Length: 261
Ligand code: CAA
Image (cartoon, rainbow, N blue to C red; front, side, top):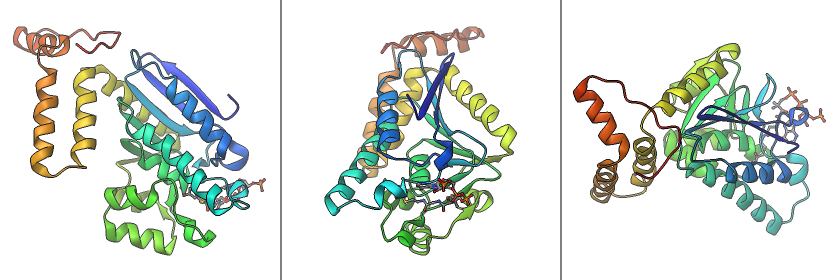
């Protein structure tokens, strides 16, 4: 891999976009490598993924403007699909994904962060969807995920103005959950990831599915989905062990390998 680093530390994996000369901008090669790395994640052992960017300045400064500058309409649409497919794969990965946003998260960078379950950032982070200044719309899910994540009105304001915002404003509007110093960001991301990884994996996966898929449904159907996923936890090793240990005041022993029961 030329542009993606992938490292597993116990039950937590870290995927780093590593194209610092272009502030980790996403060209086709980066997207293809990211797709291959995500496909290769061992979901039997990895329980939480952290995505970050290399260097101290940028998470991802967007889709690659040089590559996009000569695209035809059909090629532009295909490039949008390439990004959307990878980001949707991240969004629907069975395990939780944390974006550790270490600087610029512009255009495709903000869109990548929004396809993750949880966003935390460093105090130098800058967020925005500056596409309209380049004569295009956000194309890797920004028009859809920003409107769902913050509010349609705030998403429209940010997208129509193309204005960048700093970490504190991103936190105020609910785009990120927490802000850390640059030094504290990765330790905080890894600590959160290992905390998630220690919890019952079937339950954590079912929570992700219930929240993500439930948001696409009406409340009555969403509650039926929750009942099904809640029920699916029963009779699993984790439920028997987790509740049994609570009753006997023992500590549950985490299972190293994921199984469906
Ligand atoms: N694409 C390609 N190259 C990029 C890039 C991008 N999105 N962002 C930065 N780079 C490159 C620069 O061209 C520069 O390369 P050279 O050294 O070879 O000239 C290098 O990264 C460093 O960038 P700067 O010198 O510009 O660094 P800076 O600190 O002065 O500015 C910045 C940083 C404000 C992030 C600025 O680089 C910038 O505005 N970048 C573009 C941000 C942007 O518009 N992103 C949205 C892209 S469109 C999109 O993402 C569409 C979509 O939804 C799919």
